[in-house]
Length: 395
Ligand SMILES: *Cc1c(COP(=O)(O)O)cnc(C)c1O
Image (cartoon, rainbow, N blue to C red; front, top):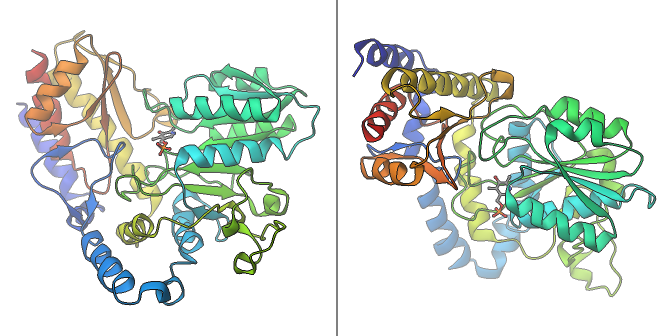
């Protein structure tokens, strides 16, 4: 143990403006560094879910679609996520999984450009589901799919490019890609970018409106702590909404859902991204989970996130014998998300032992130890302890 690092951790925890947020979560002594896979449980959720189940469903039954605001929940909760990703109200709808929303957004993107554009670019390093869905979207729309790394995108763009599917933060390495410049390059080429925000929303400012993003999707169970399988969201820029042609035009996005019309007529606004009946229990658990963000500035979250990952790397350098692990985490802050990825041949066994000692990160095949830092509930003393126990397990 290093006195200096323990002291540094204490000083930073004492000065942390977000330190009080931890009390809003159900946590124990475990150092939980897996919030980039499943966020911890916000304390407000169990009571709200109990009310939704017992009173709204159990007593009000069908009346809750109106009286408990069930019908409008997808847009209402979208508006609560909006400020966290830099979007004005009326552009985000919550529902379905990220995978399904990638499909809607990507096919919708291709339908926004003319038929002559016959290629879809996909992030070659993407989370697998995005790649699978992009392959199917390409087949359905008669386009060719070309995997390229985000760095290669500017050079790969041409008058053939219809759409580009990109991850904001690489799930494996934690590398943050340059959303403003890539979005501008895609737009300048006359194509449409779709951003997957799964590993950035709730961890850093995204600036969707500011950077002119057209379409984006993201999940809510990672840094937004919505709970296992909580519904994802779809962002369609206001100026595009009238032209957005969803490949899944369900009755929930009809102008008159209860008119039971034979002909489909897409509603205006964010609701156009809806498909079928929303998953109310998960959705209202998410709504309660978002209370922890009240009064939080995403800029402060980002500042703490970078301080946490810097401090973890500093502790790892101090405690772990040189050469035992290789960091895949970008050194430059502009390229770093909110996680640290360390590579070592025996990563799977090391992580198993570490979890057994109360430090929970995760393992990504074939050799990556992944540690996610959720600034709302991870502190600097947690970070020092995690690095110290990791070093012991690596010895
Ligand atoms: C977590 C994650 C997903 C998950 O998709 P689901 O449909 O929720 O299973 C998709 N894309 C990325 C980049 C992710 O990190």
